[in-house]
Amino acid sequence: MRKNIGFDLLRVWLSFEVVADHYWIVPTGGAVGAFFQSMKAYAVPCFMMLSFYLTERHYADGDADWLKRRYPRLLVPFLVWPLLYAAVLFLGVRYSPTFVDSCQALTTFTYWKTSLDPHWTDLLWQWTFGSSPRNAMQLWFHVDLMVLTAAVFGLYRLFSARLRPYVLAVMVAAGLTAQYTGFAVWLFGDLPFECKWTLGRLFPTMVFAAVGLSFGMIRGRISSLSSGTRCFLSLGGLWLLLFVFYSKCMTRGLPSLGYFGIHLVFTSIGILAFFHFLPLERLGGFVVRAISLAARYCMGIYCCHYALGWLLYAYVFPHLGVGRETLASNLLIWAASWFLCWLLSLVPGRFTKDLVQ
Image 1 (spheres, helix red, strand yellow):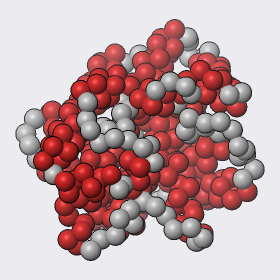
Image 2: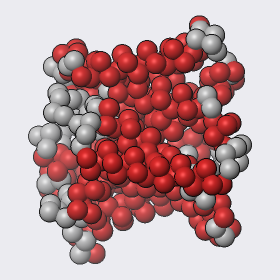
Image 3: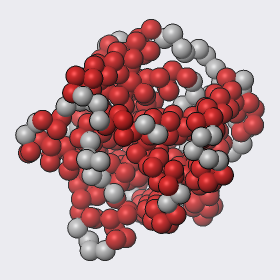
């Protein structure tokens, strides 16, 4: 199937939302700011749904060779980036008062009341659960993705094609039940920071994965829809996004370990539908190539932006007059992260490609 440019554009937007989730303090009172503030929550659901939507055929085919290639691509960034994070933090804390003063003032550290003093156990936590407040805490996503990848592959092997829709329905029901009954918080809520988010978020990410797989089962039929139908579904996706977001019809206060709630499922479906059916392929070749190039390193941006933000806020932004945790600083962090990933991709060999792509 041909490359979907709408999904590439979506990846660019979502990768920026990940940066904004860590470094943008959106001013209150404005409708536009409030919208982008809320959209931070949809990066993980959309990425997870999209991942399983695009790979469903490999699970259905029992493609063991694909699985063997997939895990190294996930493990290389998961294992290597925390080492680089630990080195940056160790050197910064030991040799640079400027680094310490700058990082201590960042919301990402003050919110969790995190000490900057690194400890060797940080890496152990990071490499086990993908989450340490003094390291690449965002890599919990990789752990959940690897766990769900293995689980889905096993379930697809265990159950026939006829039964798989029922298995996915059970996954959705079980994941939502664990969220709305409080079972997920009861089970994992009192665990240490380093593991409770990773384990607790297995329930919502299981739902996102199952939804992505469900649509992946009919991906061929979706891709063969007429232009008029695609346009209608794109507008329908936009309506679903805006309806759920502004009506608040599916939200309620519930104990959460992040990404809980059925509203995230429906809104993410709307976002994916909107971008999936955008007729961007009709744009000029230059525009299409630019979008594809911008989207090439979104995984690398997800991995590296957090530590790169520490360095930029400490050593670069003060000299440029860039405000702390503003829209401008977030755009620059995204651009600098993309540039770093591009530079690393120029190094020959598969290793650096797996690190950033």
